[in-house]
Amino acid sequence: MGNVVAILLLLITIILMVQSGEGIINCDEVEHSLSPCISYLTQDVQPYPSCCNAVRNIKGMAPTVSDQKSLCICLINAAKRYSNLKEDALQTLPHKCGIKLDFPISTTFNCQL
Image (cartoon, rainbow, N blue to C red; front, side):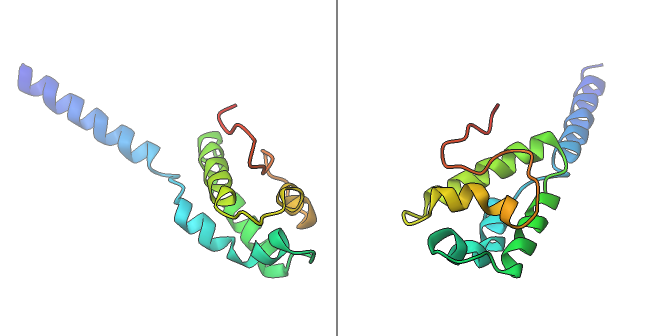
């Protein structure tokens, strides 16, 4: 009886791991994807098409609310690594690219809300 319970628990754990792992956000991949946006975020220039494509691609990485929270955390942590990043450029990037994100990009936004 104990072995059956242990096997059932193992199977449930595996199923939950597979389901929760379907939309894993890789922060290194997100940050690398957004590298074409650095000039827009640090200088007075318009975002390049490659930057807007990157924003569009990372939005596609986060179809679920859980994924969006993870993406939000990745973006904020990446933004905090650049001391010369312009906060206003960060906040307006999706709009400048014509892309609606379900959360604002800001170094002060609480992604857990």
